[in-house]
Amino acid sequence: MHHNFLFDLDQTLLDFHASEYKALGIVLKSNGLSYSDEIYQAFKEYNKTLWQELEKGTITRQELFIKRFRYIFEKCEGDRSALDPLKINHDFIQTMSVNGVLMDGALEFIKRVKEDIPDSRVYIASNGATINAKGRMASTGLDKYIDYLFISEDMGVAKPDAAFFDLCLEKIAEPRSSCIMIGDSLSSDMLGAKNASIDSVWFMPSGSIEQSMVEYDIQYTASSYDELYLILKKWAAFKLQEVGSF
Image (cartoon, rainbow, N blue to C red; front, top):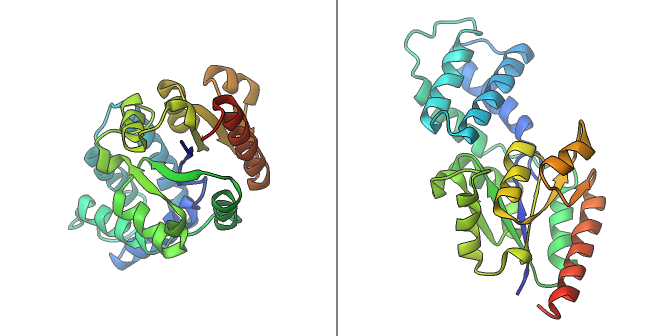
């Protein structure tokens, strides 16, 4: 068996917001609309709300894409009467896909995990658009260190649904006990791990940490890549001892 590390992508390994800020500005300006920090902040906040609705199953992906751009068009100066929100969304995703930005230290961290933790496999387990995830990973070199990508768009189901993780486990073809989910989101990553009955690490925790750890059955928290590496190394050593050998 292997030590199977399932990593969330955005705000865990890639700086989603840096890519998002740049791509949104390019797309809006190229379509004759204004752009500012205030417009980006409005988009970011509303987009987060919509993704939470998607996680709950109350809207579809297409509804999310339409809603977020109809909303932001109203915040911009310029003629928006002929703009198609789905076309703008497509252009936005395409633009983001070639503008990946790594979290500081992420690439070195992943290299260290692959090289220093025996029998490790590194997976991406992410909600989002496939072309966006794959493109940003390729543009940063992160893709060279990933064994497989689990992207909700391809899978037809999203975190935190246990069915998402069931499909991951089917592909990994090893016990749940050999898997651990690492991510920044309580509602997606940590709740998903709880639903799937696999171990979890909450990366860069905030707020009521102890309360959240109990509520979401979180085993570990880490506030830096150095701390996260030590946790994963100890977890892997414990699992090795627990089963005898991998």
